[in-house]
Length: 548
Ligand SMILES: Nc1ncnc2c1ncn2[C@@H]1O[C@H](COP(=O)(O)OP(=O)(O)OP(=O)(O)O)[C@@H](O)[C@H]1O
Ligand SMILES: [Mg+2]
Image 1 (cartoon, rainbow, N blue to C red):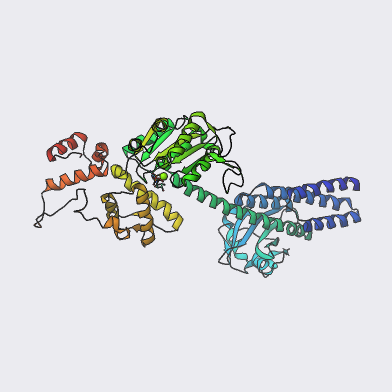
Image 2: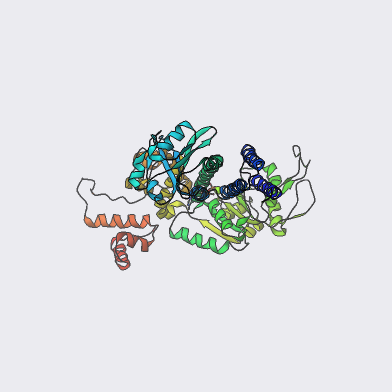
């Protein structure tokens, strides 16, 4: 090969290395000097070896930048090293937090076995390299006093020669790369060691990047699972199932949905579920709480404003209808909107056109509306607080969320669900709720619905010391209810005189409890009581149990 040809190859290599961004200038100058020195000697064979090594380095660098998967990266590194140096085996050793040296990856005949081994700090040749931060070339391992022959013996894998180079990050040795037994020569030489040393720095950086990437990835997964968990709709009561079926039906169409229900029943959750199950799910879900925005700002908030439209409007701004273009606008607490704003909203819903406050430009929007209220809108219409025409426009489909009290079956699953959420975010180790505590939850009347249950679980998690939430961890609103105060039947085993009650009395109480627990879902009650339906119906008649 002549020099001109080498020059071209060299330039190409330089370009590849630079574009891979993996070899820093310092290392590159080393390669350059080595190559130039070689050129001066003008020995073609040496130059060819050099170019081969350079090519190998390029390939290795390309490999290093091709993956951020830690395990895959380790395998790639070792495969490349073993091939390039023509070794029988190689391994990467890292120092762990307990100062033990672990073989985190290995290639060669005994690779699985070696990964189970570890060394003490300073032990063996790798220990010496990590301790001293210097590379070592050992021609005859058994003659080297640092050699730790136990591993070799245990694996029945004789180590003849080896190279071990440090892996350094920010001038700190964090581990080592080791290659064992040359296949083509009786032992490794200086050139092999230089080659290994040259790219060990890149390996250290690649490993660090992969580790950081892995950590970030885990955090993202964790956050994603918390996010998914928070938006998961929990409950298996008949009432909730009916609602979810309705949501699936109405979501794909662009119809307006009005969600009603007491505070904390999950209206916003359902609104999100409608958006997430609709073709608009890849676009934004914009939520606006009409009750929380002062009357004079609501119009500009919803429709946007032009610069100078009012004092303080220093720039023009898009309103929520425009922001939600292509997506869904959730008008929460719509029953609290002023009549003036209601008139404007009605116009936008009808024409799909908004006008900024202080402007007359007509802006076309394609926004799906989902609205919610905890007010009785029919009553508000009668009182003159809500426009009838807007009500009928919003009321294309109404989803009515029942209070938690009417779907007691959901209490248990919801409590478990919130425990899971808070266990993650509070970093506790609580796996569930005791039977007694759960009984307390079933006996409560839940004026604040699911939100109240969520808050009670959150508070209990703070107080709980053990693995389970116990009765004592619950707040007084829940535990303070005495049996007399509760509307629910409680199984009493003794009468007022302290005499045990009859078996049929206990059976009656127990059937009532099961029916309340299941929200009068008789099928489910039969499953719990382990009796068939005709038998349950007979018992209801006998004991005169009715749903009030
Ligand atoms: N079925 C459910 N599964 C899981 N979490 C729920 C469920 N229903 C409600 N929640 C949770 O309860 C809390 C209250 O729900 P949400 O905010 O949707 O209620 P809301 O009806 O909009 O209340 P408000 O009228 O007070 O605004 C939220 O934290 C929500 O995540
Ligand atoms: Mg809400």
